[in-house]
Length: 522
Image (cartoon, rainbow, N blue to C red; front, top):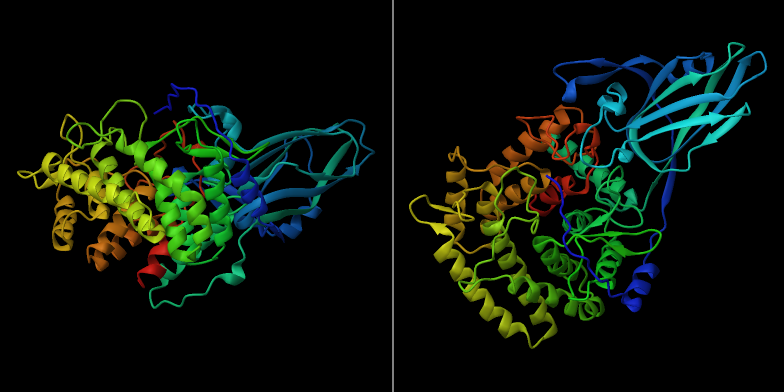
């Protein structure tokens, strides 16, 4: 699936908001991390993507190895790192009479050490694949890579030296960076060790995505996406409590809307704050949700007063998409995200997202005593009734979406989260879904988060825990040290981008088990 951008958006820059965001820029915390072992990567049909890393030798042995042309090694840093690599390289034998040509391959998973990046044929830019080819003219040398990388494994290949000398690698390390302070996180002690581990990996995932903004993924795309931000912020309130970083991100989105008042789906941070030319129905509404959650966590009235007009505008624009029945208009272009599931129709889940955000907007309007509250409340009644009348299939006992009356997990889950049916009916709906073999499924941890929370809100606590153990627990069984962007237990090589090599294996929208565990006392 590709993103088709059909419109040129004109950005309106709010200097005051941009300045407030800049004042909230966090200090990055650094830590030196060294590799724990030398490993070999071997084919393993039982392992994720068919490759596994096995211990080969202690790191201390590396300083005793003299590498010649075509020699290589792979280092394991023990767990996921985000930061800057450096190493010392010295010659051995005769004086170096030619440059050293060195190739470094840097990856989050063993498969990135095994499958050549030249084989990549996906639709996202292959420049996201992490590798360096470096010429070093003078040895000994201290090599400091200027780019920030997201990785666990580093493969070094000596492509060229002269026959007269060899090279030795020493003092390889990563200067890791994050704006997350682990000392702020209250440790949890669980009877259930799997939930305990899930919480720890969730916190690690969130921390590695917390840089100068809440990035969606430190490997790719390194951007501030609204859908990811909303979930990261929820996890943050229960862990690091770095609430000023949430505030900074909200002001950034509010600082660069388009000339129609709509916020972008994502932002570039450098060389300056730039709004991307993607607009998504659900993501724009999640500006309301993120502001609502932030206000509930902080009671920051000053920020609410500043940002309310932008939040209100996202609701107004969403309401413009309603037809005469008060149903969100469906269309073929990439107008709403919801999930990466192939063939998913977005109409019904988008209707539910609108209801969900509209209820939050009413709460914010009430806190502000805003005059728009009565208008929003009136719209809510119409939109909820329309969903019940036109999107509920009485015969099937499911919400349907689009002209083909599609039944999907996303539609049912979002209607439960929108809370338009009684709690008991929501629970029954989710239980029927387990028996609906033809329902369009879910593809991402992003959608699975919403499913698990829908179960919890419907009183299905044990099922929620079971689903978390199957899904995020499955990632742990498959070797995750941070949670991944994509995971389909039935198709573990799934990628919407054409190749699992480009997938992100530390991704913001996967960090929510810590939120679910801590909020609902699982």
